[in-house]
Amino acid sequence: MDPRDIKKPDLSYRYEFSIDELDAAIACMNAHGFCVIEDLLPDYLVEELKEAVVEAADPDGALQPGQSYTHTSFVETGPKAWQLLEYEPFMRVHAAFIGTDELTIHRSACILRKQDSQPVTWHTDWRGFAETPAVDTGGVLNRGDWPSGKWFYITGSHPLHGGLCVIEDSHIEGWNGPEGFHLTADRTSFYPADEPESRYSGFDIPGLVPLFTRPGDMIVFAHRTYHGAFSNTLKEDRLSCAIGFRRRDHRIETPWALPDSARAFIDALPDHLKHYADGYTGIERSWRG
Image 1 (cartoon, rainbow, N blue to C red):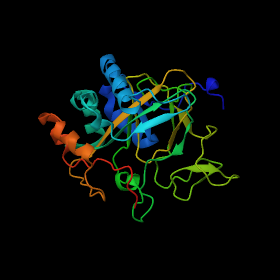
Image 2 (cartoon, rainbow, N blue to C red):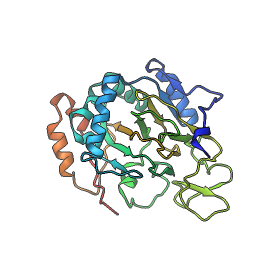
Image 3 (tube, helix red, strand yellow):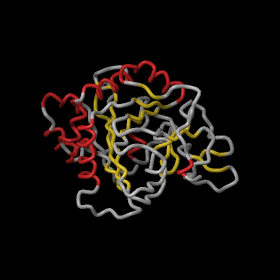
Image 4 (cartoon, rainbow, N blue to C red):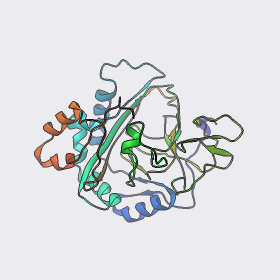
């Protein structure tokens, strides 16, 4: 599928909402597994976040065409990222979707993708399918029922620029994959029924919704929703970031000690924001069960 031929879909339901329509946005996510909150960030904050992502993901400008980098503790990188914690509309969205304003930072990330970086294969962040002990950090942290995706594509999301796409209704418990595809053994991805098992990276999929968003829009998807991303075909770096939360009373015992970077972040966080770090676990990328 040529991304130049992909147009914004005309669905039978609304999935784009303003900050004043959060009840309708939540209803859409519950029904279809995703929604978009339009124009959530002002221009100045978009620019600050662009700088923060570049400083975190490629501070020396070392990434080459075809490469990408994901920083898995974006919130720890400093005050430019922390601005989101002080931006009331951003926190209002999280409180509405999670159902409380008593929130703890769960995890965060930012991604920089250079021109010609490869597509992101189809996957779900949910790791609650297996009843066996976790084997990696995702297995520890991605088993909760809170919405797992609240991303800003701060250079815009569209197919030519490594834009995000989701599969509508794929968040429903018991979903068995798109028509003509089989789920992988761990149920975290899928592949064509007539091919060997692998994580699929194509876009000829029933139910695919390519998301066309502006830099200040927030993309929200449910914790089970399957999603992927196109290759970045433009010279401009594709930048994205997210800070996610969970209920503060949902405590998580991790098999790793609090990393030094997480401890330094908690110590440096201004006093009026420290309550968001109550229960913060950080992430130890090298941990394996």
